[in-house]
Image 1 (cartoon, helix red, strand yellow):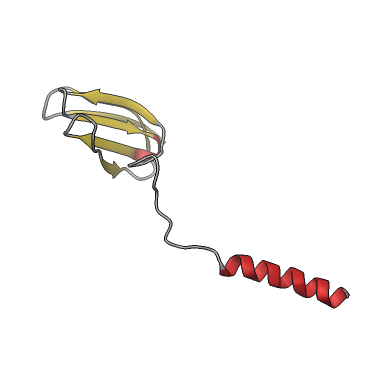
Image 2 (cartoon, rainbow, N blue to C red; image 1 turned 90 degrees about the horizontal axis):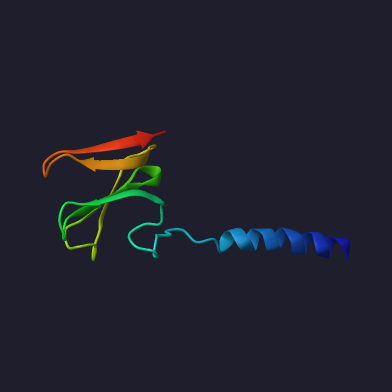
Length: 93
């Protein structure tokens, strides 16, 4: 009986690793789920959002769709637009 229980425990552990899934991807909320710190729109269509873990999002259709860029190893706390061509980020590590 003791051998049976030990075998059952071993096979249970092996089974859980055998069914582990790879290839996970983010589904909801799209396009990401990091905390956002700052959002700024230059007009009713074009805007930027920045936040946790270097997240930078850009929209050109009023927020219907967002394009994501990531700055590795940084959390961005603020986004400022000085003109249509110049933007600045404040990041904290």
